[in-house]
Every structure is written in structure tokens, then in C-alpha cells.
Image (cartoon, rainbow, N blue to C red; front, side, top):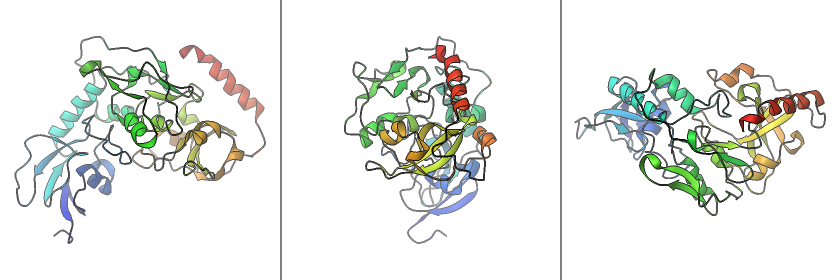
Length: 337
């Protein structure tokens, strides 16, 4: 029996009580683990997101107590709210597993094999999705569409070849900034993210499009090709910032801060969006108050270089040898730009 004012829903045999209006995806997130459907376009902090990628499809085997009939088709869990008595199948349904494999195949139709040189490698949700749900080979027989890389501002580069049209970056610009200069143009398989005659994305919170992009389509030009993410060590830090919360993750190699990102939760979503000043201009330890090592999932490749005991790097001391090695490494991959 559900608690008063709540609905009882069962997902893969696990029952829980949730508030009315809760989506199936967010109900599954309360359970956690493998029960949670993957989501490439849904972002809980962005209003209106979801329903684009279809990776979160689930099977509703019982609609509700009042109407126990199953839903005739698989539904997007990020857009479907629970009903009292609803029963849902995710990983326990062969239909869902097969459909998800097809969705991943479609997402990878035009996606290039850039993982060896892509800055998103190691923290890319599309990599995880392809490994967990992808097919051995594609049935697509036509040429992939290709685009030239575009600099949209002095800090962000757009690789449209990698984009899966999740719309997250568009919602960030709509909801966090004063104006939006980019969006989806054209239709069907010609759709692409672009700016109006390649305008620059230039406002104080636009850097968050980098954090919300689930693939390597929008990259930080100040970090491009500087290092692989699993060779860095993330540290939680904060500062008094007049524009945002100032709560960030600093990515260290030795004593050098290679990049600054927003803090992310277990579902790879930013807790609080940060401003461009914190992201691009504050890359010295002296600018921050360090807190603790960032918690890292044991299954993540970043965990291979992680640490538990916190030893903050020196505020003033610089490692000239390490910095010279970083410059040399950057020069070797300069030709990939």
C-alpha cells in the first residue's frame, strides 16, 4: 500500500513510493544502480529537456491499479510520469534491451571514431552507452555526414561530427544566459547545431554548454589536447564569486590546474552551473580554497589515477619540469587541431 498522497510504482520488481508527477526515470534514480535507464538528452537542471535521444525507453507492463492494461509501445521514461500501481520493466525486458541497442546504433550512425583523440574520452556517456548496449556492427551503408570544426567564441570549439542533437547546449543558452545565439538549424538528417552566420557565443555562463554536452561535440579550447582525463586528479574547490556559487572541480596534473568544471553528481549532471570567469580565468591554486578529492566511481577510468588522502599542492611553488613536459606533449598533438 502506497503512503498517503504518493503513488506506488514497481520497476524491475523493486517497489517504491514516489510523489505524483514523478517521471519513471527519476523514480528509477531513487532506486539507483542498473535499474536506472541511460539518458543522453535529459538533464534534471534544465527545464524542458528530455525526449530527444530515446535511450531511456522502458516497457510499462501495467499502467495502473485502475487501468492495468500494459502500454502498447515502449515509452521514454524521462517524459512519462508514474501512476499508482504502475509496473515497469527496464533491464528485465528483452524488448527494451533490443530497442536500446537499435537506438545506440542510430546515435552512432554519423558519430566518428574519435575516441583516441577526443577530449571527452574517459568521461563520455556515449562511450559507456556503446559499450553497454551497442551492437557489434552497424547496418548503415551510406557515407557519414561531415562538418568543418567551428570556433564559436575564443574558448569553445564545436565538432558537429560528434553531436547527437540532444539539445542540452540550447537549453543552457536559453535558461542561463541573457541571449541565445545558437540552436538547431535545418531538418531531418540535415539538422545541426550552429550559430547565426557563425556568431560567437559570448556571455558569462555560456561555458556550461561544455559541461552538459554528453559527447565531445563542444570542447574547451583552453584544455584541448593538453592531457587525457585519466591522467589528471580532480579536486573539489570553491571561491567567493559574485556571479555564481564558485563551487567547482579543479583538474590537476602535478601542481598545474589544467581545467575547471562544474561539480557533477552520480548521474553526470552539474549540481550548480558556474560562470566563465571561474571556468576559464581562475586556473591557479591561489585562486581557490581546496576542499577534498572529488569522489570518483570505481568503474571510471579516472579512478585509476585517483587518490583518497588529500595532499593539497603548494600555492606558490611551480614545477617547471612538469610544465615543460606539458608544453611538449601539446606540441606533439597540435597537428590534430
